[in-house]
Structure formats: C-alpha cells, structure tokens
Length: 419
Image (cartoon, rainbow, N blue to C red; front, side, top):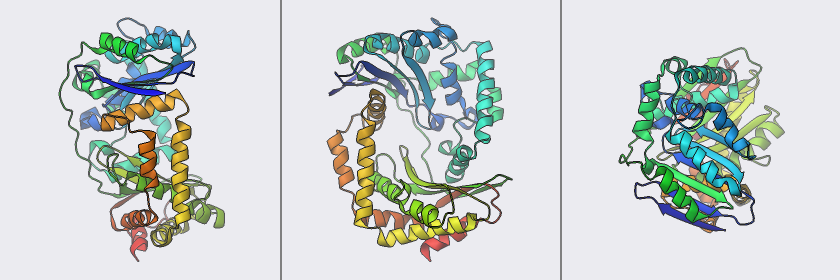
C-alpha cells in the first residue's frame, strides 16, 4: 500500500492510498463546513445543504443521482458533523472516475429546486422529530448545549424546527458560496486507485474554483451546566461530560486511554462496578470526542428512576477511585483496545479514506500508523491517573432525560470527586 498527497494550486488537498489487492475503492470530498461554521440564524443549514445535494444538479435529476452509482453496484452517501460535511462513495475499481464525477457534481452544482427543497424540508423535520423520540440521541444534543452554551459548537447539527422551516434557496446558496471553497476541501480516495489519474480528474473537476482565504470559527469555551427534562419514560438517560483535549493536543491519547479504561468495554471499571456488580443498568460506557480546539470525555448510562441516584453517585466514586489506583494492567488493556480498534478498522477502504481525510484536515498530512501506535504506547498509568484527577477539578456538564426527579444535582455529584 502506498499513500500519496497532492495540493492543487487553488488549495484543494488530495490524499490517496493505493490498496492493490482490493477490487473496490472508496472516494469522497470532506468539506470543512459543519455546524460550527453556522451563524445562529443559520443553525441547521449545513445539514440541510447535505440533504439537498442529492436533490438534483444541473446535469442530473434526483433519480439519476440515486441510480447512477447503484447501476454499477456502488453506493453514495453523506453526513454532517460539527466541523465537517462529507460526501463519499464506494464502487468497483473501474468505476472510480464515475464516482468522482458524481461527487463533484452534487458538491459543486446543486440547483436547489424549490419543489425538492420543500420535500426535503419535510424529511428533515421528520428527522428532528425522530431524534426527539430517541432519548439516547437527543440527550447528547442537550449535553453539548450545556457544555458549550451560546456557541456554534454547542448547537444541534439538525437545527431547531423553526429555522429549518424558514430556510430558503438563497440561504443554501449563500452558505455554499461562503464556505465551499477549495482550500476547505479534502479529496480522499483509498482502494485500487491510481493517484495520478485522480489528481488529473480533480484538476479537471475542481481546478476552476477560487480560494476564499482562511475560515475562522468561534473559539470553543467549555462552560458546563445541567439540563434536566423530567418525563414519564421507562428509564432515566444520564450523560455527564468533562472538558478534554482537542485533536491536536498531546494528551489526546491519554484521554482515549482513560475513557476506555473507565467505560470502553466489558472489562472496564464502570461496566464491572455499575452493571456487573450492582446491576444498576443495562448500558453504561465512557468515550472521548475531540474537535479542532476542544474535546469532551463523556459517560452515558440508562437506568430506572429508582436507581438513578445510586448509579450517578457510584459513577463519581469510581472516577475518584480511578484517579488514585488505576492499574498498569488496566491502562495496558485500554491501549491495546485502542490500537486494535485502529488497526482492525483500517482493513477496509472506507475506513482508510475517512482516516486519511480527517488527518489531512487536521495536520495537512497523514501520520504513519507507526507514529500513531508509538503515541498510544507512550501513554503511562500516571498520565491516565492525572487526567482523571483533573476531570474532578475542572468544569462538568450533565443532561438527564426521563423520570429524573431523584437524581442528584451536578454540583452534588462533582463534590464527590473532590471529597
């Protein structure tokens, strides 16, 4: 396998990874234009735009977009995150030029037909309704909101219903004009591909675009707080967040090891203590997420209204204990899980194309697997203990949804970490 990069003169970045034993390839365009790039009145528009990309271009109808890759056995998809919108495809190796042409078409040439806009508006409103009916989805939007209040990074990706109802064709076109410039795009391909041919095609399809200059985002500030929605559900859904390192922070792998040791599998502390020994829940886990300039370490669980106080208090007690006695064996196991997850995940073109695009977006290069593994191996037990200990002295956020009347307040739970 060989990894190559190339920059077009207008700033568009290209990264390819040749996997000669594959019969297929994944290819896509990652645009640094997500929820964080929206002004308040635009909240939800990046996601709306992602939907509209499939609703017709100057060259293809919505049905033709749906059929063109499926006719050759491939597929086309997209997603919106807080920092990125991605459009990607998986096809057989001989159909890579077709996939790239389709992706360029939907990214650069959407027509925003008024009738299709109204149809898709209804689809997105249904998606918002579905999210509100899915407690273990919506609770993370609420948690993000209280972690980063009154900031773009804290707002929901789907946007509020009233704004989605109001977006116009001009609003969508304006967001494209403002943010879909070549220096904010990464074209990534992996599988049985030819780097030089992809560069030539990219020059043909994207080379005419003009760069806009740097795209500034509002710096994130983790504030913290509590959101509590009491509702007659079968369970209380609880999510607790602590500020963590950004993608570029040297402590990012320490944070990942800490969250994995705390709640990353069946052998983790929280799973063993809260579920296996006390039987207080079916699901409990911890995870670390990161952005350009901030990050969060999150614990999630679902439990009954009768058990929510004991569960949340025990969770805090386990965090406090872990800061004092996290063992070498636990940290080594967590690091092994992280490495295995990374390496196993890269056995498909789709995983590699995603990682390469993300790394180029962050670093303007793709760190080698050996470099990444070395950083994971450098994580120490004391480093993990110190990181967990700092969680207790920093700011925190909590969201609860369900019969949460008996759940302790966030301040009472934080006090257990420093008692």
